[in-house]
Length: 558
Image (cartoon, rainbow, N blue to C red; front, side, top):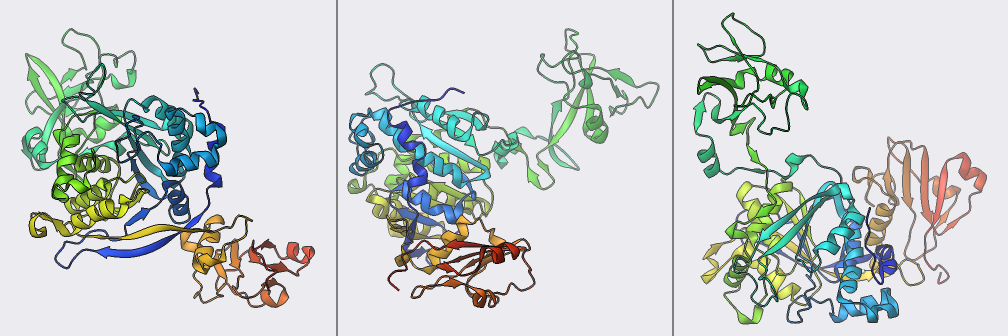
């Protein structure tokens, strides 16, 4: 597989391991006013470096995010952008200096951009669920580079598609040669996914237009059963080449001849070329009731009924790799942003994405209760799209936004507040969508520079980290008020996890402590116990399947 090399790559490939776990400090909670509709409330907006924020989300959200959408800096070199789009933001320069070292002083803007993106994509990959998908907006400045590092991190087979988005049909007048009218959406999955994962429901207007026939089963349309591609034929698909039998009076179709007057019909093209059916013999037998026949220019043709609603769900359509809906255009995103903030020049935000565009992304891969993450949150369009889609289909999707810039509060969060309660004149011009969110900042690290626990973060954060690092499944986790023992983190029939920690005294694993342990109905085969010291002999621990782990803290103060 081709790989991309750049100055500083060796410093950042595994840098995500060195990023400290930090706690997230909740600053406030915001919920809709009493007149707003019901919508999701367990949402988060986090202000801070997205690299640190993503690492801090791992204990709670690793492998749980269904859809990631990010719109990272395009690296145009344009200093005027809010995003500091040439990656020369002081915070980024400081980070590059610490991680890449002196080499970082001589990096090209492309090297800097790749150094910035690589560890973030590694953490996003960890957060993505096995059936999850990531969408990345990008333009020609970094599209080729991004594809190569996405191939490296997610895998070649996980590349789903690259969509070309017509976002500015007038073209950028400042471009040197051609006026750029498009951007890209690069899509990767965590694992290989079935094609239907990326289809969307047809709306009522499209159904009325396409499904004009009606019977007792509802609205339907007829689709030719013969495969429309000549490369699929008797030679390439022999199992799909067989006769169907048409009753010329009833116009019914059967796999086997029922009446001596039945007419055998083969999947032939008008010129006599032998094609093939789209259905195999067994499917044609199973769904025989959907097959119908009609004469066209003296020849019998077989079609199948395709219903608009099947088993309670609307028919879905496959999306194409060119998106040119006028609602997806940049000017639409800008107009909506201006309406929300009443065209305030003080809150100008260049080229925010269209809400309709992000909604289309979410329709392709999310359902009720799914988690959506945007770690380059910008003006908060992703949150707006999540809440709007929930309002339309009754879903309970949740969003997590991360924004490092100072406008995280007065633009990102403020936009979401206005979308929740309504905006415009007297907050009534556009009705609120309801919902709520918690606002966080990034706090202290869980570990100090000497690798000891930072006990100032509190017992809850420490327990959560140990639970995560041990990989204890949610349904096996326990809380300090469990009926067994306040130190038990989790238990099943195979193993129990115990975190014997006290803030003001040294804890010792000995016979006396073992006597206090209870696990209810569970009798685990082995026990993992964290403590400051251990007085049990290695022989005793082997005999009773006990594993001791020393709590990494300085106990000399006691």
